[in-house]
Length: 298
Image (cartoon, rainbow, N blue to C red):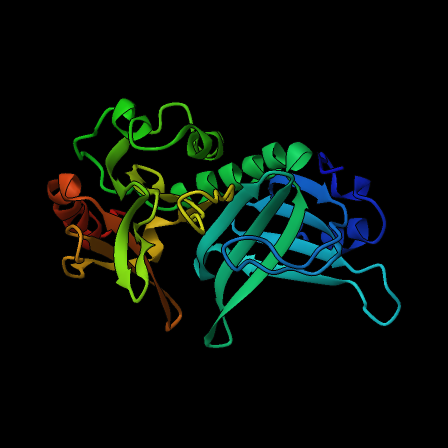
C-alpha cells in the first residue's frame, strides 16, 4: 500500500537507489513516499498513467519521482522537476482511484508526470506530499502581503462536503484565504427535434487564493442530471507561475456565465486555467483579478 518513508534507502526495490543517488549532499527532504502499482492507465479529468510503482520525494527545490514498470524491456526511470519549471500540480480521487499529476515546462513544451494509486490508503500520503510542495514554493515568495482576508467560512460555504474532504488536507494552520469564486453545477434544457434535452450550464468548482498559493477544486461534471460523477480534482498553482489574470466570456442562454482565466507560464511555455463563476461572485472576481495581476511580492 502507499506509505510514507523516512529515508530513501528504505524505499522498496530499485527506488532506493534511484532516489538516493539523485539527492545532493545538502539537499533536504520535506516528504517521501512509496506508491505500488495501480493496475490501470486512465483516471478522471483526462489524467493518464501507466502501471508502475513510484517513489515521490519533495525537497526544498524540486520533485523527484522514480518509476519502475516491473517489466522486461521497460527500464526504471527517474524524473527531476525543479519548482521553477512547475506550472501546477493535480491531486484527485474518485472512490477507490486516486491520481497525482505534475504539469511542467520541459524542452519548450508542456510536459507531465502522472501516476495512479489506491485512494483509500494513499490519499493522505499524497496530500502530505502536496502540502510539502506548497510549503516549499510558498516560502520562495511573499504573495500579496498585507491584503485583507476573508473568513474560511466563506470558502467552506461554497464547496461541497466531498470537495472539502479533498481540499482541507492541503491547507496549513494559519493559512489565510484572500478571495474565493466559483459556480455550482446547474442544468438547462435545449430544444431538440423530439423535445428538450438537458444541457450543462455550469460546473461545480471553486477557486481559492490564499497567502500561500492558488487552489482550484472541481467536481467532475455529471453526465446527466440523474447520472452522478464522483471525481474531485484539486489544482495547486504556485503564485509565481501566474503571469496574468482576466475575466473572459459572455452570458449564456440561461444565465450569465463568465470565467476567470489564469495564464500560467514557465520558460516560454504557457497554459491556462479557466474558472466559471456565478454573478454573485462578480465583485470578488474583479478583486481577485486585480490581486493576481499585481504579482507576488518577493
